[in-house]
Length: 552
Ligand code: GLC
Image (cartoon, rainbow, N blue to C red; front, side, top):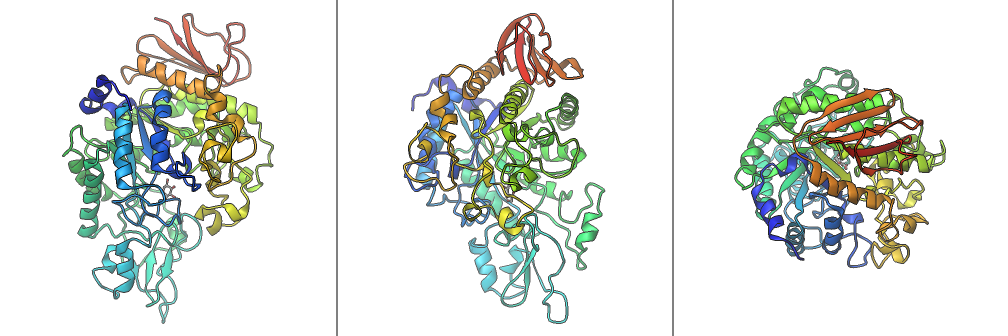
């Protein structure tokens, strides 16, 4: 791998690199498969470092690659300090970090602290040990209710549907807020706390630059003797008072992690996945804690000027409150891809995750307007890349990939699909392996068949089909990411116009970003048009299009 000295200097020197970084999320099992077994691997990632470098991102975030039985796509971790043999080895991990660093790309890994896999050695020891033993005290075990203890300690529903408590052969029950293969740790236990410090150091010592913290609003719980019912939990509205989520005490843990991060130079960074009330988000993003937190507001919004304007303004104010930078994200491994969300009718405040009903119908109801969805997704992304703060991108969005809606039932993998049949369509449709070439076995993903079926016609969206093609989504991302590097300076934004169907703001240096959310063409400011998400229409900005203009 060739790299310039300046790139390596940059990696060493800048402790604020994360504040306005563009971070590309890799779901390792579906990115690139070097050994042809149908599962993406670390050697596959290494082979695509030139692609990532050309894309122009600052960092990659790797979803879990740890040993796992894949009860939840790798978010069931059996060993926090190793690589799944199906994906690679620790040596290959080191090679991957070196290759990415050599290309000027930083590395963020996923830490899953709320729960382990049931195959984790600690949980296996807990099962083998007696009730009340130190082994069981690393997890959350309780006796059941009823005379014979055959009723669960509470009637709680897990995040993937089905019960949150599972009984073990000696009659006790353990808590799992997600799948039953994901027992929740007992964070009151100092041993658990110490072990995660070791894990953070283990990866930091290997050169990892930062961490994405899974379910950061979980971990600590108030499990007083009489547990509330699910109905009582559902009735809680006051932020910060829920016994299972977003408890104030969790920040003591992150204060300890911050000390670990600060042992390194530059300090390791972290970003919290915290699905919390907006008012509580700055705590996760504070400089004494994790330092940055996702906001999923854009991901839940319609393609709508008023919604976007409010979200941008609110989040800039929030990040000012924590001293962190804002984060933006449209797609990740948990949600319907934004090219498809925007192809569906606006949600207009309807509850539930956008696109779920459509997925349950097998992608037929309502009919998705695929062209409009992609057009809007491109406009939305170009707007996002013009905002101050960090932009998180999900693998395949740079190809404009749609959600895959026709995965046969027997080929699904997500526990959400199986635990909540007919209600939750699961998340496999955004985890389908990437198409790299127009044809061939698994469209260049690997030499074998991909572990999730790829749709026919996927090759037309492949890297090969878009590389060097003017106007392709891939070339739009490359152009925008390169320009972003040139243009990005202070984390400030001044509104030029935020009315009706247009969102228009200016960044320092006369960099203006204009998005037309409507259907009628609108005028652009005078200046040099740097990039547009669609061709202009006689000098005007067409509907569902973004332009960057340099006015200074
Ligand atoms: C997070 C992950 C998701 C996973 C869950 C449980 O929300 O993003 O994929 O299923 O945590 O670990």
